[in-house]
Length: 145
Image (spheres, helix red, strand yellow):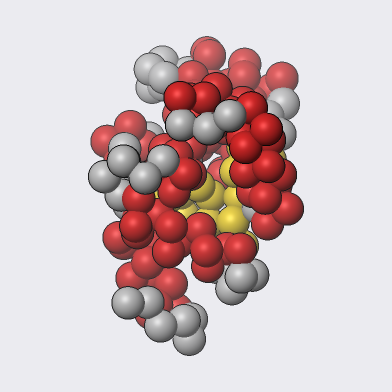
């Protein structure tokens, strides 16, 4: 199974005070174990580094991002992706539009996000963390508590 992770899911994993921390941790650990393929956009790494600054030191953030890039495949956005999103009136948020483009360009199975409403125009189906865990359990031999 090939899942694209929206930035908010990785932030939920990294920051213990976020509401979906436990389930996000389960999902990310499945990627770390190599049981499913996890994908992220290159711009998510910038966002995670910046947003997590109140929870982690610079060195800790470097180490966390190195862990993520060692297990997740990183998808780079092209000039064409930016132009496509910026000229499409359906997209109101550049970051979400680029996430959708990355998942679409790579022919992934699902986008995992806790902001489902922002992915209504996605060609790749968007699911929340809970649904992703159910799909993984159903389509693989992984037992999820």
